[in-house]
Image 1: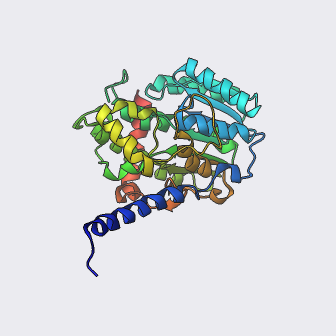
Image 2: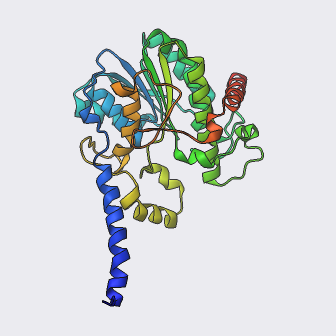
Image 3: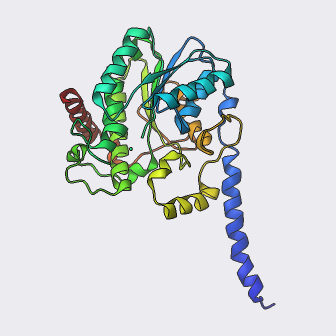
Length: 330
């Protein structure tokens, strides 16, 4: 029997619709924080960039589990508002704000010094903060904010983490690292092509390389270090893109971006950030990830291989050494 034009047209459309529907249904079957019974009473957690977006939901989850939670934020007013919301939502009064700008190494040192003086223990460190330009330290802003600042913070707090073991370090990364390049002159903005995606991709590649090297150095210490891709999440980070590109992101995001399911809802947080927090929370608290280190988790909470460059131990060691020298110099 001959097919009509309508049959020819609708057949592929139904296939596409079924494909997208399958994607949306799959997101409902992902690991959910509320299904994880792990409690954090008596444990201390630091979340950087926790005044909004993914970081705020991570801090909220930790507070729900009874942890002492420190929101490390550049914007103190926004941080105080976020802490108040979290305290009200969780009935956990042990939620606090401390000033931290990861693009400024002096700020990182001051924050770390305060934590070491005030906190007897630290069990979870989540480096979640993200920004191109040159900082007052002479470093490229994206590398300072996304990599060198968190790198310095982690190293300054290592002794406290070790003495609190078992402890976990979780670095929020991105699958975009696959398109990153290794060029250590980029740390100062030299030889760097200033396209936002290029700069961001490079920082995330270096971040994973150094996380893997840190994990090798921490073997046997009881402290684990892993990288996590939270997924393509609609957060305030999109404000850096053009209106046309944001519109495309939102249209495509209906099927591919992570969306809020409402189970962790807090007022005034951009929609969809909640789902982006899931893989980070999984890596930070779940029993399944206990003892796992030097790995990369995707947005579905699965262990996957990062880009070949990120797995190169020689590059990781070199990147770690250069990062150490830069952060000790400035």
